[in-house]
Image (cartoon, rainbow over all chains, first blue to last red):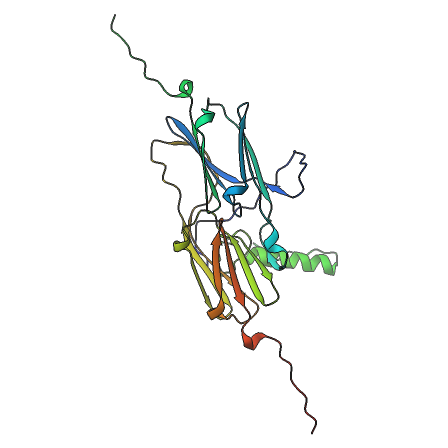
Length: 132
Length: 148
């Protein structure tokens, strides 16, 4: 019996982009939170090891790519399948000024955690009002 | 609500497919909950045959391996756990919240008798791989024919 609030979402393929590499690409599901001094992003990329993630930030566009090894499936014949296996690709345009020297990325159990510290200009600043 | 719809024209194939689709829809209706697990349930699973047994691969990123519970009985394999959201504090605002969280319990029915003593489960990079060898009694056996 499955009595649960959690549901699996079908993987969405990446559309409208021509790839030079073979293989299917899917959009990883993400959570993006904004803090006073940084933006944090978590992306679900099951099957991607820390050595197979590539993150770039160029001209305000953040690109996340994760490659999945399909070697495991070579000797297996499918009986029943619910999800597709493929690489991950997603891009975000960042409106905030990000200090790209201090971006930190951590990959653990198939989840990418990205910390994007805001640059000096993007941080909230308190302006002191003086009495005249 | 009519459970089944019949078209006036007789088309056996189309009718069968429609019947199948209607039945599937009925069985998966969350209001009825007959306990049928299928696409859309968490975690999604793929099931393979590797020659010596069954391999179940589930995508469950972001779990602490110690909190994943895998159990089996006869033909049923059950995966249980809870996927917890990262702690962000109340001051944070969010732009996207797409990732699923919560408790889950998913059972799959396997075609052969399981050999639970030799079943292994491995969690790596968010993928849970369960290998279930066929029980000796489920393997094909050669029977010698003796001359009388």
